[in-house]
Length: 90
Image (cartoon, rainbow, N blue to C red; front, side, top):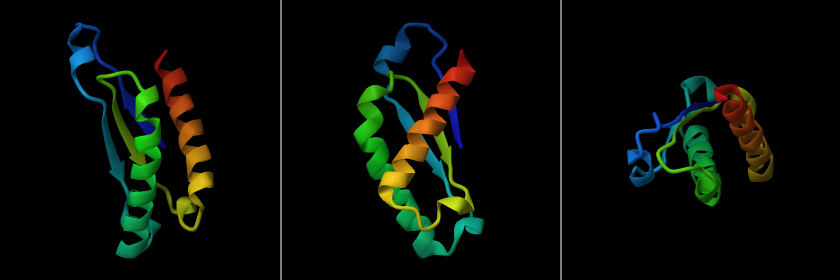
């Protein structure tokens, strides 16, 4: 699940960096699994950060279904969730 907060349009948003946060609860797995998922998602977001307008704030919540998925599968899910969040904001 991706939560997205867009800037309020004051013009200062162009100077603010894009912020990304991750929520990986204990229901996903033990610390090793949670940390691995966080590292995978950080890597995936680093590759996508250039496509996100400046000033956006994004929170990515990881569900237990993400456990054991490959980086490619996580990337597809991440893109899909981000697209849903962007269309919901309009």
